[in-house]
Length: 160
Image (cartoon, rainbow, N blue to C red; front, top):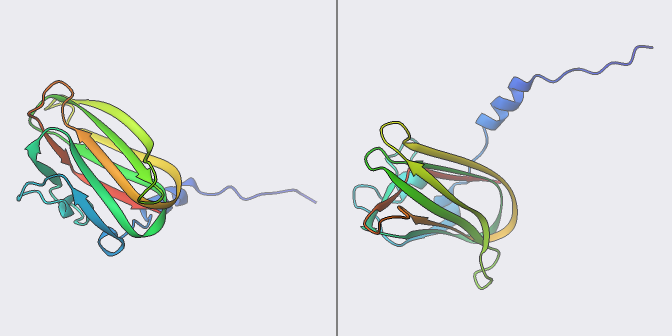
């Protein structure tokens, strides 16, 4: 008897990833933020597919917190930053808390240099294994060399 095994089509895996179900943050959480430009509100980065993204109304370090009504399990974090105008080196910290009173745990601390018109996008997709997440916080220092730069975020998505 011949031993055999079917080879799985890897394109099916890519299609499954493309159809990944993202969390509906407006139904599951409240969003807290340090500031937002009236022309670039936070929902443009969290809810609107193809939206303009979020921008701060004030220069300097900014925070965005997603506070879940019920603790969530998170397996993927998608972040897209975009800077088309100013060359700058941005630093961000992504952290979470399992309960509102516990200390935050850092997922990633990263720097990235934007150099328009050539380097304008920073795309990060993190595979994580976070359970019982009450708060997810993104803190952005828009330019490590200047205090008058404005923070921005094109898209943030989460999946279970």
